[in-house]
Image 1 (spheres, rainbow, N blue to C red):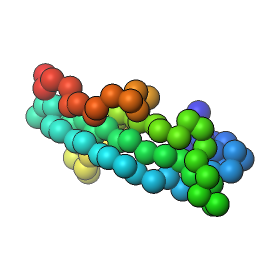
Image 2 (cartoon, rainbow, N blue to C red; image 1 turned 90 degrees about the vertical axis):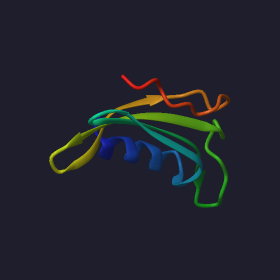
Image 3 (cartoon, one colour; image 1 turned 90 degrees about the horizontal axis):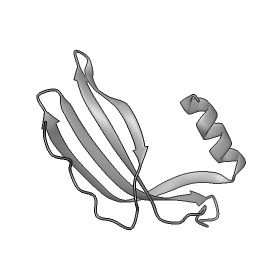
Image 4 (cartoon, rainbow, N blue to C red; image 1 turned 30 degrees about the vertical axis):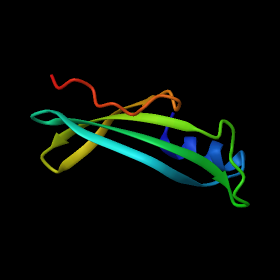
Length: 87
């Protein structure tokens, strides 16, 4: 599924913007990193889209032209954001 399609689906549910509550990032290797984020998706009226509390993890890789997200995964919003062990 493309990012454009994903945002179209969110908009159809009433999505307007996200409030970011926490970001944690760490270097996991010579050219790899990880970032975690806790956030809430909101409508234009400020009403949360369920579930209110969300979290995601992102694996990043450094390429010649900069850092890129290479993997996105859901995370448990009820647990602390913890950097994975460097490899």
